[in-house]
Amino acid sequence: MALTSGLGGQLSIDLGALARNWRALDKVSAGALTGAVVKADAYGTGITMASKALHAAGARFFFTATVDEGMAVRAAVPDAHIFILNGLYPGAANLYVRQNLMPVLSSMAMLEEWLAKCLERNEAYPSAFHFDTGMNRLGFRLNEASIVRDRVQSLGYAPQMIMSHLACADQPNHEKNRTQLALFGSVMTQFPGVPASLANSAGLMTGRDYHFQMVRPGIALYGGRAVNGRKNPMAPVVTLHVPILQIKEARTGESVGYGASHALSRDSRLAVLGHGYADGFLRSLSASNTRPGGKVVIRGKVCPVIGKVSMDQVTVDITELGHDIPNPGEGAEVLGNVLDVDDQGDAAGTIGYEILTSLKGRYNRNYIGDGNLPPG
Ligand SMILES: *Cc1c(COP(=O)(O)O)cnc(C)c1O
Image (cartoon, rainbow, N blue to C red; front, side):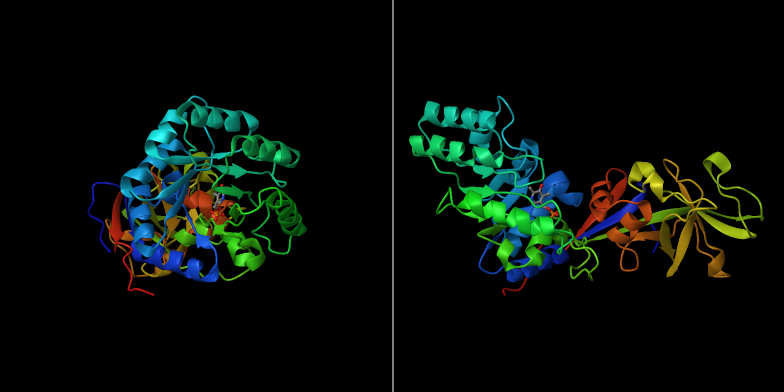
C-alpha cells in the first residue's frame, strides 16, 4: 500500500463494522434499549460520521461527555435522544434546553439548577439521575437517593432514567459487580417505573442481570476489548497505515534514537516511519535493550520498535524481512487485522481506549461504508 497524502498516515474507519457491532450488541441486550456512547469524538473515530452510522444501524439514544459533543450529535442526528454524562455545567442550562440535551444530574447543586430552570419556564425538561454505587466518580451518594426522590416528587417531576456505572465490569468475576448491582437495585426501588441503566460494554457482556431498560456500550462499538481474558467478539473498526520515510543499514553496537538507550545487537536493517507520539503512537511504545516496545506490520511481518518513539518518527527493525525490502512511501500497518488497538494498548502499558482516543491530528481519514445495513 503506497501512501500519497501529504499528511502522516492513512486512518480508515469502517462504518459498516461500527454498525454491525451496534447491531450485535443490540441482539445481546435484546429486551433493553441499546444506546451508543460517542464521547471523545466517538472514541477517536469521528463523532459526526459515527453518530450518523449508529443512527442508520438503529441507535436512537446517544451519550456524550460534554455539551459540545452533544451539540455535534444533535447536528448529525436531529432526532437523537442525547444524554450528557458530565452532567449540568453551572450556568449552562439554557444551552441544554435550546439543543434539547439531557443532563445526567449527579449532585444536589446540579439537580436544583435544573429544577430552577424547569420552574422558571414551567416545563419538565428531561434529565437522567446518576447514583454512585461505589466508584466514587460522578453520582449522587446513595444516602441522597431518598432526598432526591422526595424533592422531585414534591414538584411532580420524574427523570427519564436513573443510572449508575460499574467500576470493575472488565473483570466479570469481580465481586464489586454484584455489590454495585445490589446497591443499584436499592436505588431503583425508590424510583418505581423509571427506566434504569447500569451496563457499559463489559456490563452488557456480563449478563442479563445488568441490562435493565438501557445499556450504554462504548468501546465494544469501536472494536475494542471490553472484557479481559476473553476473545474479543467485536469487529475491528479502525485501520491505520503510516508512511515509511527511509530505510537504512546499521551496525552491531550502534544506538538508535534519543538517549541512545537501545544498542543494536546485530547488523540491522531499519525503517524510519513518519509516525510519532504526536500522532498517538505513545512514547511508552519505545523499546530498549531491557524492554521490548511496540510493533508494526510491514510486508505482512511484525516488526519491532527500536529505541525511543520521537514526536514525528519511530524506527523499527526490518532485518527479518531479508531481501523483501520495502520502499519509502509504502505503508506500515499500526492498526489492522494483525495488531489491534488492544495489542498496541497492551504493548504501551495502557488500554485500547487510550490508543483510540489518542488518534488525533495528522491523518488522512477515510470512512468506509455508511452504516446502512440490510434489515435484520
Ligand atoms: C464511557 C462510559 C460508558 C461506556 O463505557 P465502555 O466501557 O466504553 O463501554 C458508559 N457509561 C458511562 C457513565 C461512561 O462514562
